[in-house]
Amino acid sequence: MAISVALAPGAAAKVEPVSSGTTTLKISRNVGEFLADTGTKVKAVKPAKEKKNGFALPIVKGEIDNKKPKGSLKHDGGLSLKGDGGKTELTRFTAKFGKAPKLKAKVDGENTALFKLDTKNAKVRANGDTTTVKGVKVLLSRKGVTLIEEVTDMRLEDDDVVFGKLKVAAEVGGGELSLTGGDAALPLDAAFRSELTDQGITSSAVSPATKSGNRFGFPVEGGKVSEDGSSGQVRLDGAIRLAKGTTRLELSKSRIHVEDGKITTVVDGTRMELMSFDPNRVQPAIGGDNVTLTRIEAKLTQDGAAAINDAFGGTAFSDGDAVGTFQVDATASGEAP
Image (cartoon, rainbow, N blue to C red; front, side, top):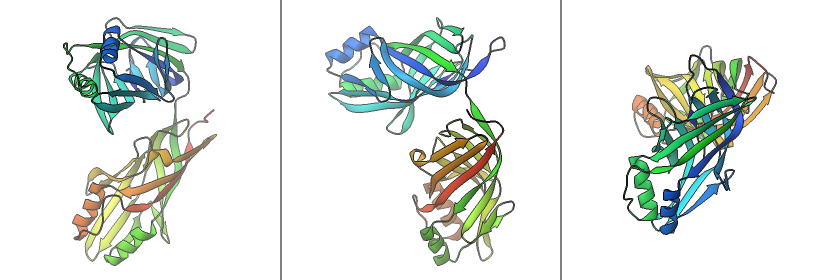
């Protein structure tokens, strides 16, 4: 489960990048007793661990204010709940502190605001390379109450339930690499090329993109990636032009969202999610100021397929059709450790 603690910078404080650490989620006594009475089991999803003081969630990256409960932290691991009403996993948590503090989790593939956060009594302290945040209450939201009731198959008497507390111990250091140049290659998938040909559609590059044979090349015009290459965004310049007779469709200014597994593109003046890929299959390699991302296996989304079908007529293209595999070879403004 990835927990993201969003903390924004304050005027008299300093926001620092975070490279590692642990966030501990301790379930309250009342909720713990309710879960035990209903026979509901709570377990850690690796690499999170269950310890005496709560569930320890490894921090992957983020940033944190060294004086106020503000910033952004992401964690790995998670929690699984199994009761009479079924089983569910809470993953990729995102905690936001600020005007509307809340804790989201990915449940069944969707980010859901399961918890509200109370930071009235939160205390932040910086000691060397470690910044701690204590005293953050985690309360169930309406959606959180619904989830607990569904899993336990029991009704909670009190909707305003304190689910537990968060304690953050973040190790500052690290950060993101700013991309300053390079290029991305996209050889078109054979089946995709064949379908274009069958439909009488030609493909060409719009400068500064290039095309050599079936391989498109796009200059990297910016973006940022994490120092391990597991997240961030790569911004590309140029476009692919699809044409049939007098009809043209340009797919331009693509952005590869590494962690989210999506590729957004400007189509007819509107940015849309044209393609998607499995982020777990991406292979990053960071060395000095060189950033390489391979196995970005792009497939049409439902909207992407509809954009091509609507432009040229017919129903030849479908959600999930392979387009090709991107490889990014970029340069960064600084050196990763």
